[in-house]
Image (cartoon, rainbow, N blue to C red):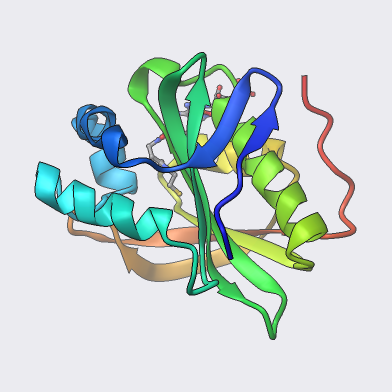
Length: 180
Ligand SMILES: CC(C)(COP(=O)(O)OP(=O)(O)OC[C@H]1O[C@@H](n2cnc3c(N)ncnc32)[C@H](O)[C@@H]1OP(=O)(O)O)[C@@H](O)C(=O)NCCC(=O)NCCS
């Protein structure tokens, strides 16, 4: 697969660029991001390697976008663990601390799902978040996902603790969310 850009109103989901590294380094200083969406490394070298992987869609197992608003990086959304045989993928997202509470994550998540159903022919997109991460659950709900259940101590997050997680899914024929 070749990376594609998706315009979504004021937002642009676009392929990651090498020169995003400074903005990502600023974003990962946020404690919430470190806790719930640990990128693994916070050094410029580590983040550069990560961005290089995000830019390379050739393996076909992920589609990773930077989310931009007015030329500024405001977040990230990605379809990962794409399984063509099962026609499903997982969704992940984060937004920069200053961009929160304005619907960026919901609109980006919805756009990634719609594209996955229409262009990749996927039937199911699922997402997981720690039970304590209520904002992520609200994003899932507003982006048209249905809560399926609770997984016990299923993932170690950035705080080093294994948290129970909630599992949500959106199917290709679920009604799309009404977004403002
Ligand atoms: C979760 C996250 C992506 C939400 O991003 P966002 O751009 O603020 O999301 P949106 O504005 O689209 O929607 C957020 C919704 O959650 C709600 N919300 C925010 N904080 C909340 C909290 N602590 N408890 C409950 N709801 C909360 C908001 O009110 C909003 O709902 P509303 O529109 O009905 O008022 C962002 O907080 C983040 O990056 N967190 C750190 C990383 C992370 O958790 N990533 C997800 C890992 S699964």
